[in-house]
Every structure is written in structure tokens, then in C-alpha cells.
Length: 332
Image (cartoon, rainbow, N blue to C red):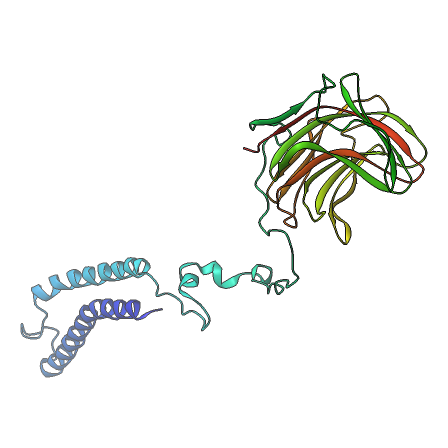
């Protein structure tokens, strides 16, 4: 019970008890006067000065009525007075005072300490790439197109080219550029697109394996951002149903996307597949037959360089693939 309620109750009690005490006092006084008069006169008759007046007799019911009304009013008002707020514990805050449930939260809702931030050096941005809508569809300006509809092209033509790790044939056959390679080691061979050097681009091509012999996977390869120091990325699509993205450096091949299985393409002999590579600064997207395979981030080699197509294989493997409908567009 707060101070306001105590004050109200004391005030009303005084208002109620005052008339009652007054009436009781008058009754006692009248009784004493009547007793004194009876001893003097030995009669029941009382003088007018001892008998209660008519006004007093009429006032008593009114005083009693006011006392009862005061009691009812006090009972009603005591329920309307707001109770004073409960004192907060020493650690309570103003927000907790406004929200009583905030002072009784379960332990599971209390904040927990976070681990210290990692100090390991990373070469990729910490912000995830923005979502790329229809990344496999080229919407930029067309800057290069080759359909090999004529032999009059700047692409390399040669037979029985002996290289350190391969023996190659390069020719145009039935409107496609055919590359044959016989591997003596686990090796990669690529042919640059003539006079084309880009950092950001959207490349599409059609590749069809037309011949293979020996064990091990035969892979379609696309290299890009090849600079004068020999750094470049290479995306490879294997006939065992896997794909990858590596960065070539003086230390060897560094996996950016290690070999990942997929059903988006099928490099069985004489089965054409459409591949797309999108490079936009540190974002690289790989696509096959209109399906996005993967989007990854890497800032290790964000420079302009040559784009090339080719094959990758292992020792004692030989194979040939036809390339066609090569387009390169800008990235919007």
C-alpha cells in the first residue's frame, strides 16, 4: 500500500468516525444527565435541559447516512488509485522499467561472447558477389564472333606439331575448328583467340569430342587473362562429368574451384555441348548448356589478358574436339 492510499484511507476514516464519535459522546452525556436527574427527583420525568432536543434526534440519521456514504466512497476510490511502480533491481535499465518481461529473460536469450575475428590473410573480398540474373545469357555488346564457315581465318592451321608434352593437329573441318592432341604427360594445350585480350567478358562456345583413345579423362579447356608472365585462369570441363577452375602461377596450378561433379553436360563422343565463361572483375561464373555451374570469387589475377581454347589430358591419352560458334561479349 502506497502513501496516497494511506492518506486517502486516513482522511475518509476521520470523516466517517467524527460523526459517529460525536453521536456516541452526546448519547453518553445525555445518559449521565438523565441518571443525575433521576437521583435528584426520584422521578422518571427529565427536565427539558436534560432531554435531547428534537434537532439532535433528527440530525443523528443524517450523520449516520453521511458516515455510510463516506465508507462506500472510500472503498470505491481506493480501487481507482494507481499503485506506485515497483523498484527496479540495481542492474535494471530504463528499457526494463517500461517492459516488465525484460527483467525476467531466460538465460538462453542473453548475449553470448563472439569469437575473436580471424587474422588469417585472404586474397578474396569479404563481401559476397551480387546475384547475377541469367548469368549464362550474353547480353552485352558483341565484340568477337567466329563460326569457321570459311578457311580464310587467322586461327592456326598446322599438322603434326611437336610440342614438349603433346603432338598436335590444328585444322578447320566441316565448319568447325578441330584440335587433335596426343599427350605424353599430364598437360594442357590452348590456342589463343587471335588479337583478343580482355579482362571482363562473356564467352560462349560449342565443343564436341569427336575422337579419343587411351585411359584417363579428356577435358575441354578455356584459358583467360593470360599475361606476359605466364599467369592465367583455366576452366576445364571433363568427359568424366566434372569441372574445375584453376589459377596458373609460377608455383603451379592453384585450385579456385576444385573438380566438382555435375550432370549439366555430357562429353560423350559426337555430343555437342555449349559452355560459357563470364569474368567480371573478381567474379567468375561457369555455365554449361544454359545451366549455371558455379560462381566464385578470386582477386588473385584481376588483369587483362589473352583468351584461349584447348584440350587437357593425361599421359598416353589422345583425343580431338571440334570448336564452333565462338562469341565474346562485353559484361553489362
